[in-house]
Every structure is written in C-alpha cells, then in structure tokens.
Amino acid sequence: MDPNASVAGLASAIQLSVAPVFLLTGISGLLNIFTGRLSRIIDRVRVLQQAQDRVDPSQAEALEHALKVQRRRTFLINRAILCTGITALLVAGVVAVLFISAVAALDLAVIVVPIFVMAMVFLILGQASVLLTICGRVDSKCVTGALAGAASMG
Image (cartoon, rainbow, N blue to C red):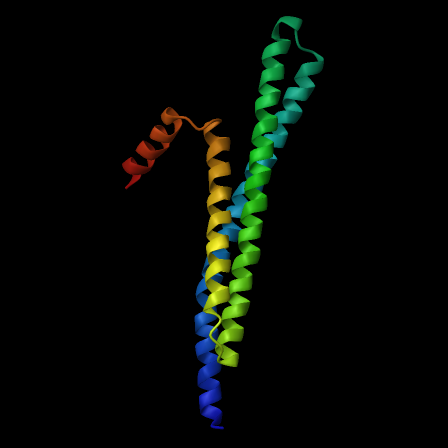
C-alpha cells in the first residue's frame, strides 16, 4: 500500500469532515445567545416576583399576567436550547460518520443524510421557539412584521 495514498485519503477525510464543523461553530454561537436570553428572562421573573410582594392589589392581576408571559418565554427558550443542543449532537454525529466513511472507504450516505436532515429539523424547531419568545405568539401580524424587518435588512 502506498503511504502517500493513505495520507492523501486521510487528508481528504479531514477536509470532508471539517465542513460541518463550521456549522457547529454557528450552533455554539446560537446556544450562547439563547442562554443569554434565558438569563435576562430569569432576571425579569425575579424582579416581578419581588414586586409581587409589595404590589397594590389593583395591580396584582397585571403582575400575574406578566409573570405568566415570562414563564411561557422561559419554556420556549428552554425548548430552543434543547433543540439546538440536539442539533449540535447530530451534526457531531455527521462529522464522525463522514470521517469513518472516508477513512474506511465505505459509502455511509444512507446514514449521513437522515442524521443531517434530523439536525436541520431540530435547528428549525429551535429557531421557531426563539421566534415565539420574541413575538409572544405566532399570528399573521407577528410573522409579517418579522418578514418585513428581514426584508428591509437585505
């Protein structure tokens, strides 16, 4: 066996496996943003809970509604973190399978494709959860506003 061929094959395997690693970098950035959002939501909940102890009874209902909204946002951002974390695990699995496929000279596309598609589905679910925390609900006005904002940026 030619040693240059094995080194070239290994180099090719590394090149093939590196592309999804950039996706992992983006996912880690998203997780950082999501945990920052979660931290701010928790801070708001603490302030609202402290205010609940000394609030006028006429304002108690509004304060309870605000707490309910924050609880919903906490649930959604936690879901986004979970889905995005699962995405990272699936993409890491794709990297491992691609590397094994290239080194062992096996065609593992049957494994890679469904794992990558699942990763993208979980990424979409995570992003949708974050969109819901921003909008508070998904209705035509929220979606239209988000799309208009995105269109004005481009």
